[in-house]
Amino acid sequence: MTKNEHVNVKLDRDIQCAVLTVSDTRTPETDKGGNLAKELLSEINVEIKPEHYAIVKDDKQAITEQLQQWLAEDVDVIITTGGTGIAQRDVTIEAVTPLLSKEIEGFGELFRYLSYAEDVGTRALLSRAVAGTVGEQLIFSVPGSTGAVKLAMNKLIKPELNHLIHELTK
Image (cartoon, rainbow, N blue to C red; front, side, top):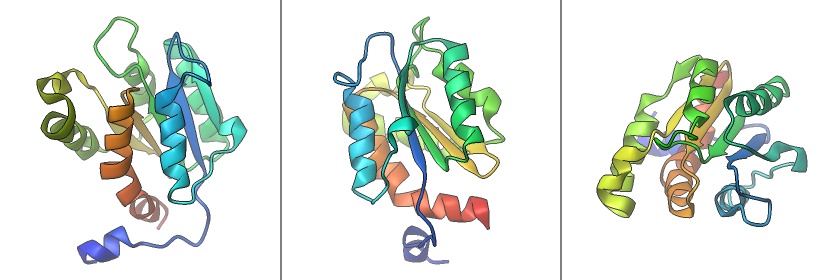
């Protein structure tokens, strides 16, 4: 496949996505990162069902339980926002990585590179953004700031989403 063929992969079905915000302080009204992720997904005709959006506290068990619920519902893609830094309360990565069948190392590497080059400079090294597969499903974990969500969605996730799902399900 050429580069354009990879980017232009068409699926014969709708993509089911979920957005999980990890925060001790956010509410649906103040969740700028999660709401931006939903908005950017809608630009590629991916709608988030109300039951596929949630906010959980920075608690490893709560994060894991919500992810496992959506994975059992056969959601194709889960995007988590928040909890990816190095603070004591940042445990999203610790909840996500044990669930992964395969880590997509290039996602975190590219995210940090682009964050460094285009957004936050050397502060990018604090990000532990990760992506991977769970069977035929994808999980992307990104920082909760709107800049990070916008960068991850527009530069990495949206351009490759159909291709990633195609590869997982062929």
